[in-house]
Length: 304
Ligand code: GDP
Image 1: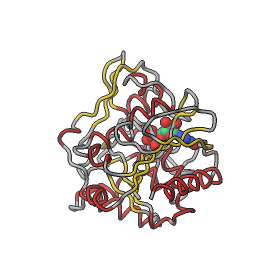
Image 2: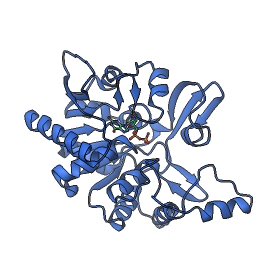
Image 3: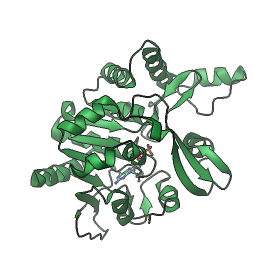
């Protein structure tokens, strides 16, 4: 079983999945198209969120960064005239420093991620979608011009009107070796309730991935309930990419390879080829996440 993940919805689901399946059995392929070098260190927001969520140190108010972090280095840099676009916490920065040191020492991003996960006491396998660091850039095309995802979301608070989304560099990178290997050995793929455009979209755009998914049993959980996402900018992105902001729109994003979709209790979706299941997909806490994981266990059980 492989998960495809961004940095919020799927990590929330993983909290429940580990209770049901055991943490060691989780293999999570994570989006790296939002990665950026900041002040000399590689920030991988989605990988960090998965590690921090499973290590139970994530700042649950924002779903990124470490709970109760301090920002001394960020403000010290500011006093020196170096204004970082992202407000990075001191403990969070330690993760980025170690990752970058490992990369500079010759480790791949997959290896560096495994070291970090281990040091945080996480036994799930966390795999970057590609081993080429920050080689893909998520660019949001807006009325105010093109900007990196981080500028759109972190600096501009997601306010500009979105015209399109593109992934610069995506054609030039290969999926990580471990991701390719898992696609040969695993039968089930779970797409968590992550942003279908900017979190799952880049993973699907990697060479050969969509074709390989057609040969798998793929189950997705909708990140959209009714006509809005639970959090984040998915609505603007889906609309700009020509999808309706609904569970139906999510299904359309994955239609060519999807076998099953889990949607909210009140959403009504029908499709001739995709099995649709209704469940409470809002994860307010761990209990909700475990309940949703049990729904997925049943769906998987009936599929294999
Ligand atoms: P990002 O990298 O931070 O954008 O994180 P993801 O792409 O992994 O997750 C963002 C998506 O998670 C948003 O589209 C939300 O609607 C969805 N999401 C967040 N919490 C929940 C939840 O409790 N249930 C469901 N179904 N979706 C959620």
